[in-house]
Image 1: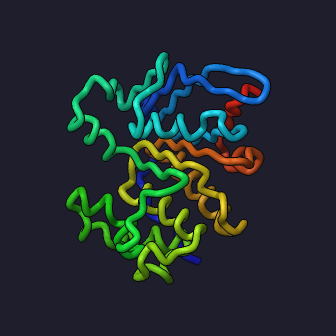
Image 2: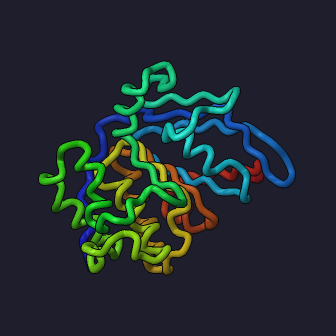
Image 3: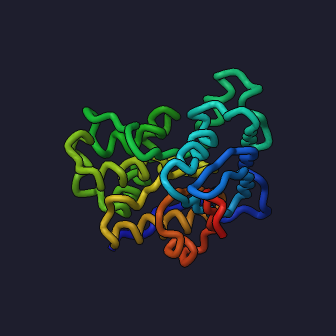
Length: 227
């Protein structure tokens, strides 16, 4: 069995990585407001019905979309939307984001896709071993040299997770990473995210199984307002 990918040691003291406030969420019975504070060394799990706002919350935190009216986001103690685009690009390099779909470059190999954040940061050579560890942990090492466009849905989902984590970001945002995975692979991904949430990162993921997330130590938030 592959060893757990290396990660940063837990921080000496907790500090707020991100805060999301005023997000309007809705479910079949009621509407409400989501306020979420994410300190270092925390693991949050967002669940709720389709359309409740889970993906929208992650995209707002990832700076993939502007906050809706009445919503505010703070990252690393700053208002990202008061900065210019260059400033937001700097903040994005501290974030690992994996959406449900898209984002992969099909003509590049699995390894090249996973290593892309390191390549953009000029750290591709130094990070090769870490990329290999990540692919091994997620069961992608046997297909590392294949073009990403040839992968099935489950492996594409695992590859998006690998790319989001490989640069050891401080804020990790993963949208429904367990869907399409085998139970064994899902347990491995959930275990890895839980471990990262005990270190220097703040981790937020969405999904459908709050019981598994609770067992992994996550704080569960249900966006339809249910208890």
